[in-house]
Image 1 (tube, rainbow, N blue to C red):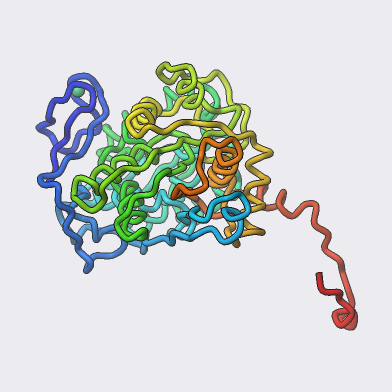
Image 2: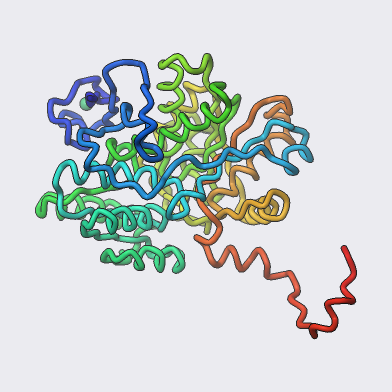
Length: 405
Ligand SMILES: [Zn+2]
């Protein structure tokens, strides 16, 4: 079993189902009885770590085979940039194509434990697809309020799973619309006894526990050795914060001796966390967003201040990547590594490359880049990758005359 501890005031919550500290609204952290992490290999995917997840009834588990994603040693990009120890954790291989499946699996399982009838959420795409898929599997209804500028391909995927999907005016670039949306979803959920599932530690601390299993897996895949540096795309910030929590728990369990440095990567034009990090202040919401990298363009990151604390604690840093550099990195991952991933994931390779070139990263360090989602998610970006490539139309007889490259 677990306890809920407020990260602001340190109080323990008596009610294990609240989403925020009843005293000050602070972020709640789930803490477990002992430091050990006994594995339960008979349970599917991430649920082998159930001792460190908010599971009270194994019969409630909703799984589509999430987790156990590959950690791949870079075959070409790393060596060409002066490192033989660059790894990519390919989260695009989760059931709906992104790491959010880990969170949705835990979130919808938790919803069933609470016997709630429906979920409601905001999402730019990936979290919505995950919640919709796991909700469909659990036969619970879903209500998704999406960003006005969310890519149509992502919305199409969500709709196919059957929840009600609505696009909210101003959501994604107007802080006032964002605030009203969140408050109203919360009120709607309270009135109907639904569960609000936002993929942020400050809103859904129980569900977010699913994301930390990425850190457990990385350590196991490296034969219980921690990486030196871990690069994570940061939009809302909950992913980086959860992974950092996972590394700390894995060390406390005695499996690794040291912790990695964490690096937050944001897109130029929508990088409130990088700006705060460089200025040495708290995160302040941005007025507008000038990046098109869907999935990590949040003007007001809900877990932004947690990320700043994690970067300090881990001796890490934050940096931002321009969109055109991200698109070039996306194309390189596909053509040089065989990894077809979305732009929001490609930012990490762009950042690693920049840090190797500047000397901030050493070539002998063990680096892990987290690739958060698969390339099919953003059809405009897919199109862009092949726009300049010719598609000659030939006769079958001409095949014999093709010149080897
Ligand atoms: Zn508190």
